[in-house]
Length: 201
Image (spheres, rainbow, N blue to C red):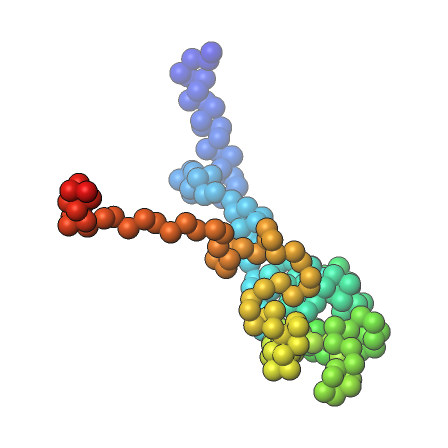
C-alpha cells in the first residue's frame, strides 16, 4: 500500500483533470451519485383506447389488437397485412394510422376479408355476411339467445335454465349450486312432554 503522500498526489492529479474538463469536484460527485435511468424506465407505457378497448402501446400491432373482442390471431394478421403496419408497435403509429387501424378492425369485412373468415355469415335478419367486433358482437349474441328463448327451442330452453347447451353430460359436471344429491331429513328433537310419556309406557 502507498503512503499518505502518494494518496495526496493521486487526489491532486484527479482534481487537475476535473478542472481541465471544466467540472468542479463537488459537481462531479453529484453526477456520480445520480443513478442513470434504465432503458425500461425511459420507455413510457402507453395505454391506448381503440375499438372500445384499452390496448398496450408497447406491444406489436398484431399482438395488441388481439385483445379486441372478435379479433382472432388470423384476423389480426389480415388487419396488419391490409393496413401495412408490418412489425411496428402500436405506440409508434401516428394519429391518422391509428384511426385507419380502428376503422379496419371495426369494419374489416369492407376490406376484402374472405366470407369464410367472417364471424357473422348470412345473418338471419339481413342475409349479409359481416364481421362483428366488440359491442356489436355482444349485442348480436344476446339478441340470438333471446330469440331462441322466445321460440322455445331446445337451445333456448337450456339457455333459460342455465344448463349446458351443446350436449355435454350433466351427471357429474355443471352441478355447482344447481342440483343437490340425496338429502336425508334431519330427525326433529323430541319435545320435553313426549319424553315423559315414553318413560311412563
